[in-house]
Amino acid sequence: QYGLKGSGQAWRSHLAKVLLDDENLGFHMCKTDNDVWYRPATKSDGTKHCEHILVCTDDILCLSMNPKSILDYLDQRFLLKPESRGQPKTYLGADISPYSHQHEPDVYRWSMGSHTYVKEVVRKVETHLDGLGLPLKKKMSTVLPHEYKPELDVSKEYEEEEVSQCHQRIGVLRWAVELGRVDICTEVSMMPMHCAMLRKGHLDAIWHMIACLKRHDKSKMVFDSR
Image 1 (cartoon, helix red, strand yellow):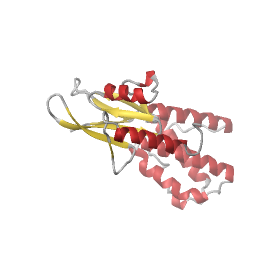
Image 2: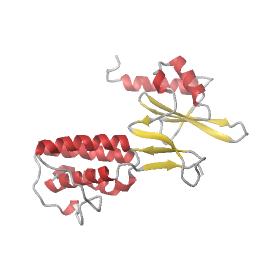
Image 3: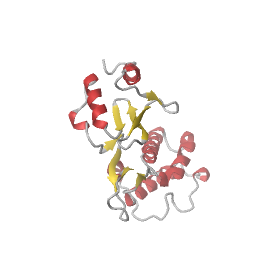
Image 4: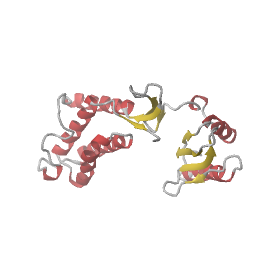
């Protein structure tokens, strides 16, 4: 019954009840995001902090000084995949890994990147363009074509099939931004404003942005608790 219309909501309600009501967990729902859960905790040196659980459907990420104990307890209530209970490597398409700066080689902080996602996006786009006999640009100096303004584009309007292609690629780029590619946020945000009347120039700009991602594909965000 996993695929029923109300399955997602039923699962979330059940998980929420466990996180809220189980006396061994006692997490609280964050008011700004109901899928972020927290509870007060104390480190071994007496420092006060909060433990967090991030939930997206059935993907769970635990932030704690001892995340294993929380996941082991959840495993008694739900069936967790054995290979998923460990230091995170990916979450919702993002690459998750410890990071140390060259000036502080012994200090590690968590980082989030989109290298794997971007690499797969570029691969699919290049395959698509190869089928059309079109190459992906190799040289560009800006995220959008030089001096290009989407709102002033008067090139040929696209048909329904081509518009669908544009919508898909815009969605892909927006998720790349969600995974940390804030360097293309402004340019990507411009494109959905033209979804009602997409033109050839808009799709060319999208290919240009994806070519830019290919050239600069190893960007990551590092989270410093200070």
